[in-house]
Length: 373
Image (cartoon, rainbow, N blue to C red; front, side, top):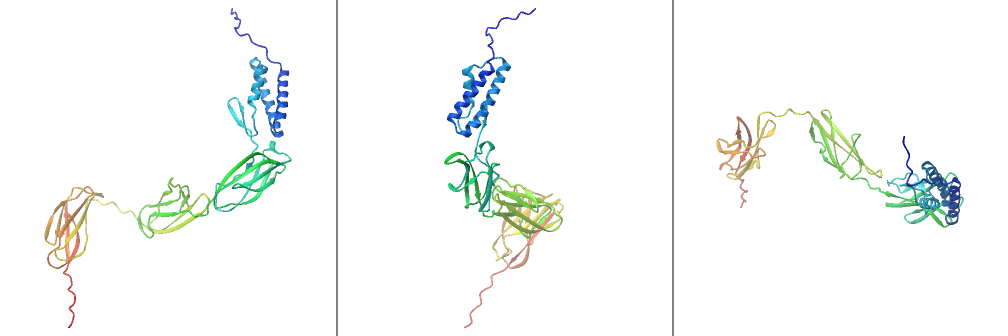
């Protein structure tokens, strides 16, 4: 048989409910004397709710809070101003009478703005009104409708940032205020197309790259494109072979738009090159006898640049020498043109059983005509 040991801390009897009623009435009386009438109304409701919660808690655990503890809890819980935080436990709840503005834009391209708002129902009084200021200057004082609505007044904004403030007033007393900033921007966003160039022939997939202002909306051929934080954007278009019109539209936060169109020709994708391919180009196609010419040789193996390939250069029947391509598959060779005049001399590069050629014309300069006596 279990024997309950006496507790070292004897339980106190719960505080009678009549005491809670007395505490609440006393708190209401003190609040009514020192607070604004509107605040007293709010505080009275809060006091009743807090007192009820504390009473339920005390009865549930069977422990009386005590006169001083309960009074201190109620006093600490109540906000000290119309827009103070009401703390229940550890969670603050904001009690505010500030005007509530209907949704306003952050950016606009119009200098005219209509706005409306409302006052919280518990803050509506017969002598209340809403003062509207724009950029620090009083614009209008609006009456509050029975349902708490106010507004319908047009505001003329200036270019750039505009601060709109709505203040709940009672006579000459400011109760609470709400502010909002609207920026007027009437400049169309910049748009620069990096590629493709207008009229270019594009093989297979068309890649559109451009730049606009940050946070702008970009649409390419009716498709939304997400730009990067710096305003650059990229879009890929798969189109059949033939002419293609690319339409680009950008729109900034204020609604300003910039449009552009360009046309390109889409061609079929060519099969990749297999085997070894050579290419040669000359820095000049017409030179004087003995002048220096630079040949640029490129080698491609199976569609890739071919480094360290031995290539032989010939001019006509004369072998200039054998050279090796660098890491980029290129060899640059300088040689002297023939000492005699020749038209369409063959400059040939040979490697791996294949070749490529270019033509060179060597001609003496035409002497100036002699003056007749």
